[in-house]
View: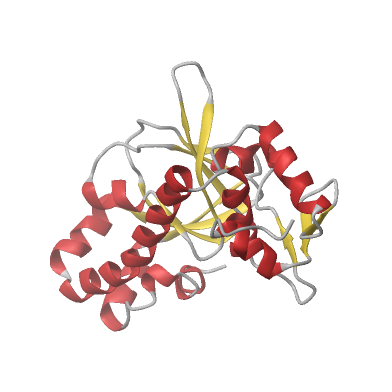
Length: 227
């Protein structure tokens, strides 16, 4: 993929056009990571802002005991390390490629210079950042206000589905559990409860078929379930 192809599929840059877009394309470079490769570690200097073209990335933090907490998964069209690149501070989390991954990297210094000099670029990015902030608020809302079953139901409903309403978990189940602030055992129990209630069909892998979206929606909104 080329820089322009990657950026054209990124909502954060959907309002950036003309000379502003051309400047971003010129500064960027394509970078590739193998599955399992650590892209950067928490506390490292920020090399720039990444835009995923192909593949997926796990963003996580490590506690003093070595326990990892997944903050979110980044797929095609999404970005990571953007805040550190804009604000010029060390990376607040670590990143790992979960599959062979191709990204556009916008070097931090060049990117910040463009932000200082190009008001149209700033306005376009601010509009795109609103989506990022909304997602962050949703993550906090899930952890604080929803129980385990509601978190899982909402997570499944937000995954892209095929025409037969099959979704694919974006990572290993233990990483999904961490993203939802659950233990692997709790995630398994919740999956089993949804399946026994006829709301989903879960195979042993990452593919799950959603059998009753309305029932899942009721659980996600913590309404009285139908079982």
